[in-house]
Length: 170
Image (cartoon, rainbow, N blue to C red):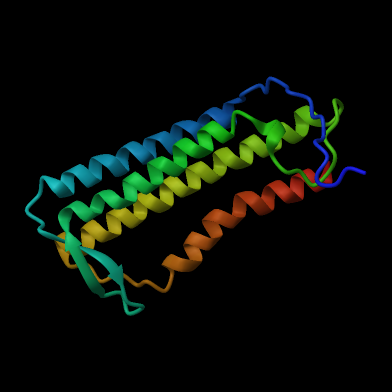
């Protein structure tokens, strides 16, 4: 008797990339490039310290050198590239229903679009965090950190909840 997981045979389909998918990709890449440009602007500016942590009152409570601004673009770029690579193989994703030749194209399209939206959301989130760290250091702007954590959770959860809703509906 065999134990363990049985590999499900799923169709490997070529997914048509539609206009909305291209828009998500372009926006995600644009936000990522803007984040890197902003990070290099910080490095070549007069700013010597960058906030690396904020209290809930919005005041920085920990600082690093201006080169710590590169942490956010590096982490984001690694995640962005990883999600881009993974998105090429939708047949390996987990799905809420069995994938067949009949529903494969629809399910794969929904899943890859959700990943593209997630990439775009993460790009916006990391760009905003980079900008907030810079503006806090350069302009001594007080940041209300109360909205940052709910914003991050919402930006990550929206694409996944939307995908699950659409995938279960089909």
